[in-house]
Length: 366
Image 1: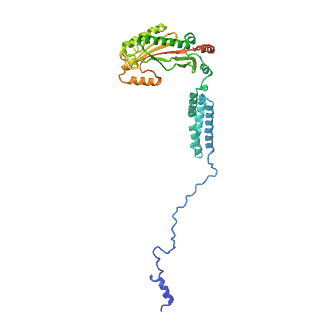
Image 2: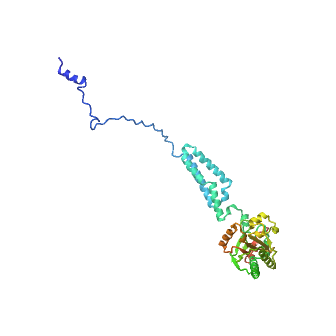
Image 3: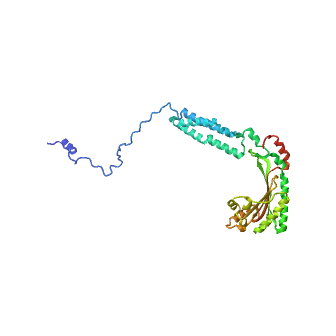
């Protein structure tokens, strides 16, 4: 006979009749499943060397060396010592600093500071600072740092290298050239107006430029260019051109100048015909756009030019374009005859005494 206890135990170990009910779909409300922790364990920490510093002493040495060298370069720049920057000393120091910086870059404890030092060295070095110094010297004209005392003294020479200073004293002065040119222009204009009826227009203004002395400075002599005179009427016919130049030649001879010389004429100038064609529009004076005649009063400095511009011989319009541009700048007529005088290395009467006094400081200069 089965007891009640045995019967009760059989309900749980027998079939499924006595098992606890299956949980509802989705599980019991509020129930949580424990998920396995799949996070990998942390890597073992790298041992820290307590004796290691953020930047090694070698890195600091490289950085300080680069900074000090750059400050030295800037100091020399401020002092105008362009010549010192390119001296052997600074170039050698630059190599030493660069060597220290490169070594710091290959040192594990000094790479960061070495990189900073490299940037400083790239920005401020002999090449970059030297270029800045040269540019400043060129812009200001101050070459004190690169010239000897003798060279600086020579810059003040009042004459022109290779020219006898007595020539400037013996030839026509600036004022005499100006007066001679005015008289010459007046007589040429009067003759051509009487014979051909030409009227005249002044072109531009006189120009006075100091001549370089050949030693790096300016002399007390000038290149003088007068204002020009131009006919308002064209001069185009070949025979008329020859007649005009004949009259001009008579006047310049009366003023003590030599016969006119035609640069544009291959028969007289001796210039290669291809060059004449390039300069004057053709190698034949009958079809040239420009005639250029010249004379002087050597040994005095006056040089006289008489030019004729002729648009009727312009075959492609290029000459007209250039003349229109010139006319826009100066207001001169597009074509016709123009007269101008140029004199080089002339001395003003007002500077004569000072010129002679300064020459005393330059014995043997010429």
